[in-house]
Length: 162
Image 1 (cartoon, rainbow, N blue to C red):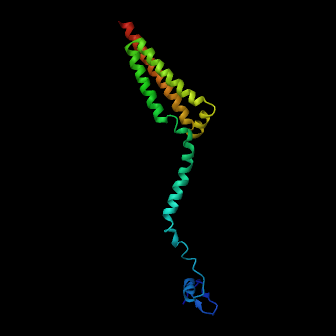
Image 2: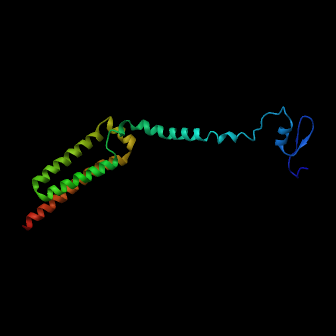
Image 3: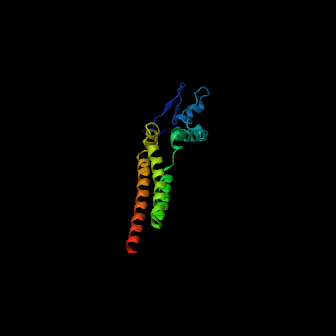
């Protein structure tokens, strides 16, 4: 007996059914049920995961054409810090060692800025890496110059006291 407001289904023979799934089970010529159409989704789960991961990684694989040939942001900062530290130590010790280490810092700065200012490679790097790469390039150059300058100031103050 159907509840109130629950529809009843009538098949072609005039039989009444409370549940629409029973009509599909009762008649052998009835088409396959749409109620079980989500049953095969669990079987397709690994394929969907692989496809999703591939589609997510596809743009990064295509963008790696230029970015894999230049230093990463962490490499820029670490190289800037290490070269700046060498320049700092050299400029504290003697003026001429500071000049030599300053030339090393100048060479690194020139190399990185030339890559970034290239009309083809630089624009591709900026498109792929974004403004954080520009900040890292110029920040590492400023860090080297800052450490070199601090070393020279300390050396000059040492000279004045002696």
